[in-house]
Amino acid sequence: MGDAFELRRLQRVTMTNSSADDVQTETAKGMNGLPNAERVRRLVPLLRDVLVLLGEDPERSGLLRTPERWAEALLTYTQGTSASPEDHLRVIFEMDDDDYPVGSDDMIIVDNIHFTSTCEHHMAPFRGTAHVAYIPNPESRIVTGLSKISRVVTLFARRLQIQERMTQQIARAIDDHLEPLGVIAVVQAAHFCMIQRGVEQRESTTITTARRGVFLTKPELETRFLEYLRMQDGKPDIL
Ligand SMILES: [Zn+2]
Image 1 (cartoon, rainbow, N blue to C red):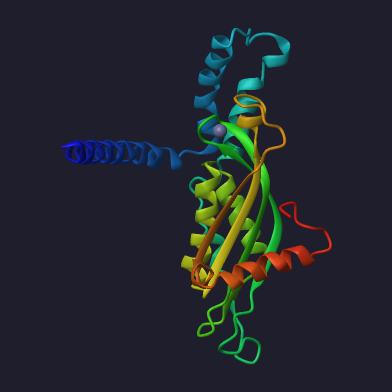
Image 2 (cartoon, rainbow, N blue to C red; image 1 turned 120 degrees about the horizontal axis):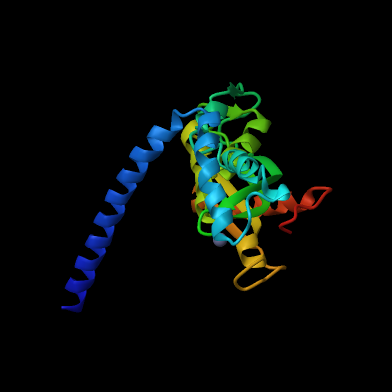
């Protein structure tokens, strides 16, 4: 009986979530077409109200233009919301089979990609580094420009995020667009919602990983990836 109740409860939660998502998507879709100037215009009175609710005087000289600056900053923090990783990952190159022989599982690693993102639970920043590696597919031998990997990290960071999802999105975007043999993303970040409030842990960081393809089935590849990171002159922050 307990199980049946649990099942019903789960179903209800699922349904509630999906309808909430639909509403949110509809609203967000409408916003995506709005020019930034219009968004700022509509955000300013709302953010001014926030200042008043915090007990501030929005007319004092230091705060006069704050709602406008705040609105522009929020739009910068979230400018990746409507952007697609495809914008960057459609730039691909094909190596010939001399350059990348069949059977190779050599990897391409881009490390120490710095990012700042926004925690969607507290609207507080979290910042850190991402390390990404992928093993090209020996059939297609498709690779992308090295800078594109860091652009993909920045794109996902400039959304309201949780670190766990951001890490998975980075790996999935590379997996979907380059169809490599495997991809791994490791992200380490410090969260200001843990530093400035709550548990006030200044030294604590969070590490998240996302692995796809052969990185799931061959643990020795993950070991090699970590060994390569340790070889770097400027040791990645994670090690
Ligand atoms: Zn948070």
